[in-house]
Every structure is written in structure tokens, then in C-alpha cells.
Image (cartoon, rainbow, N blue to C red; front, side, top):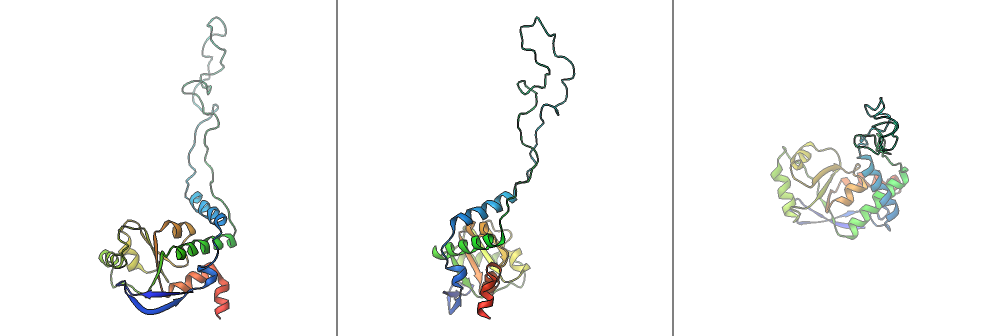
Length: 216
């Protein structure tokens, strides 16, 4: 698969980038994609919610009222779940919400997400670029050039680029990530993906190591 390469002004450079069909042109597996997004979202849950059960609530040691003659039920404790201030029945306790998914499934999910973005024409390849210093205006100009202002944009770089990262940090919805690190959720959650030309090989290697072997 070939895609045109654009410069940072949003104009076609006249060059083309080679994208692996094994990564960017597969039949998306929606089931695996769902499971991987569920895994990512579950890992974000703190799992610190906690309630007290009947045996943990303070008080209730003495008999609340006499056994007979009151016309009321013979409750053993004022901390019964049936009463206000009593313990909680089957309430939440601290727990881990993490979901496990094997490496092959996670890779397939990312390839499925990338293929969906390609089919939706929501991915463009740009020339490699960097900034001399962190400056938000430079990223704003980049987004305006591609008519992406106000959208959720994922910018993929071949390696960690401090100046590009800091320049985009204050722009809502814009995220800069090394090409080997985005999750399937981050790919799907973005409205558009801008990937630098040299970052393609990094992304393909992280998603499918066999791609590099076939090229070699």
C-alpha cells in the first residue's frame, strides 16, 4: 500500500510512503479489538472503592432494646444492613480490574485499529519534522494546515521528541506518542492520525515483527 507524503504545510510533497498490507490493510477483527479496548480501559480503574460490612461498622455491641414487649423485631444489632447506619450488603471492596490479553491478540487489535483508520481515510503521512524549541503555535499551524483544528489528533513520531511533545501538550485533544507505543484505544479514540514517514517502520515493527523480516 502506498500513501502520499505531505509536508508540514499540508501540501503534497510528490513522494509516496510504503505501508505494509499486513498492518494497514487487514480485515479488522472487531472481537479482539473490543477485548483490547476493554483491557486498556479496565487498567485505568483504580479499584479503591470500599464499603464496610456489618462486622466492620462501629457500634452495636450492646443490646438495642429489651427482648420482649416492644412490638418490634428482635434485631441483634443496630448495625444490621436493614437499619440506617448499618453495614453494607455485598458492597465494593478494593480489587484489581485488570484484564489479561495475550501479545498476539494485542498486536492484532492494533492492526485492526490502524486498518480501520486507513479505510476511513483518517491517516496521513507527513515528512519528518521537529522544532527548535517548544512552541504551541507551531503545532497549531500544523493542525490548521491539515484542517484538523478542534479535532482529536494523534501525532506519531519515530522516537521521543521533547520539543514536539511540549508544543502539543497544551492543545486539548492532541497527543504526541512514539510510534511503537500507541494502544488500540488511543488509535480508535483519535479523529485523525498524523504519522511521520520514518515512524512507519517503527510502528510496523512494534505491531508485526515479521514485517521487518520480510523486508530484510
